Figure 1 (cartoon, one colour):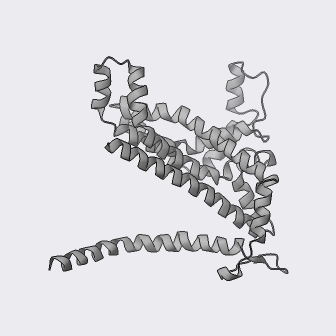
Figure 2 (cartoon, helix red, strand yellow):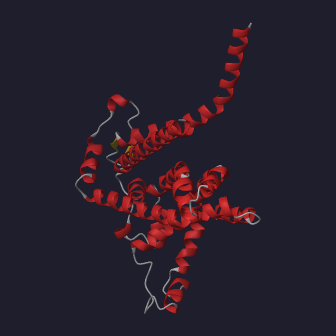
Length: 302
């Protein structure tokens, strides 16, 4: 009877997982397979549209090979390097700005914590495109950014921030994705046992040494989680530089290339191949993050 009850319970719990499995299959596995069918398919010679190859036995890797040649020795390689550069700078900006904010809200703010959390969640109520359009107005030659910089005598004359400058793209990425960085990091910092910090202070360590040797190491898993949550959408972003630099080719990222080849050209195979390469890159980053997290958990259990 006990074994029967256990099997029944296992079946019931598996049934609860069924909707999630169906959701993943319908909106993750199937779309990925469709992208693969386009990447390894062919082009209709008359309509110049994609002709997906749904049978893996009919897949043609010629388009993927051509894309790899362009990535590892051509124009697309520069786009990938530029994307890594922009994402790295934006992540550094998120850490420099977001870590102090998350630390203050989690460890220092008491009465104002609820208000600060509400302010951090507030950007999610506004469309990302609307926020980028707001930055477009701020960065114009007669916008407030130039006015403030000239008032502080940092600039002698108004600067055209919207003319394909890479700092504009980095600023936009930081502004757009920093809420995704702060909230997971806040959750990690808030869970740190306060007794560990008090022990460091009781042992004679200064506030800075306690932070450096206690708080910061304990927040590394949360910092990594926040970084992963932030950079994953950054790699596929194509709205930010399109709106802030009017689609200047000098600041194109890999997301812009994917959009162009899938929507604005007769080479959908190239766009689908770039999607697969970007997914492979992000998969490698996720595997590294999961391995690092598991290693940190094993060390903590010791």
